[in-house]
Amino acid sequence: MGTIFNLIILGFIVWFLYQRFVPAKGIKNINAVELKAVLNNKGNRQFIDVRTPNEYRGNHIKDFKNIPLYEFGKRAHELSKDKEVIVICQSGMRSSNASKALKKLGFNEVTNVKGGMNSWRE
Image 1 (cartoon, rainbow, N blue to C red):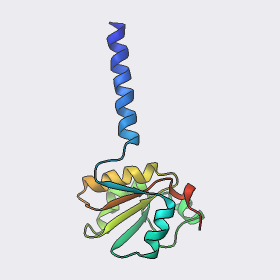
Image 2 (cartoon, rainbow, N blue to C red):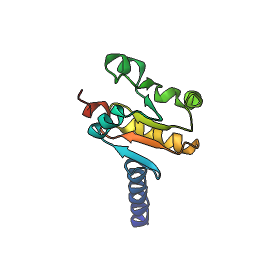
Image 3 (cartoon, rainbow, N blue to C red):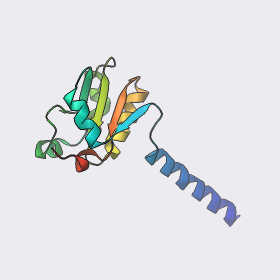
Image 4 (spheres, one colour):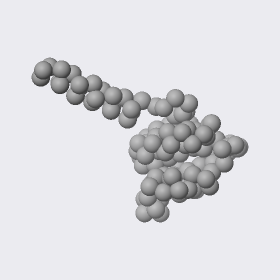
């Protein structure tokens, strides 16, 4: 009985880690170097920073609009589904969650910045 319980717990841990760290289907991931190239050719894109307002005020990239993750559900309608959405946060975790939420809301082109602002150097 204990072995079955341990297997269930192990399975849950593996599932949780998989859900947390494996990119969602249809979400593109780029790093800070690739982001610089994108910013040089903005095209038909919208840039979203999902950090808190205090984090955003402390340091942000000029072209990024601040929509904190905790407000994301209420404010996603401010974004166009016809444009690619590029999402950043401090480390890449919140932006990954926001990217998944955007895909669920029907956004086709969603890009997450891996490493977030921690990897950004102007």
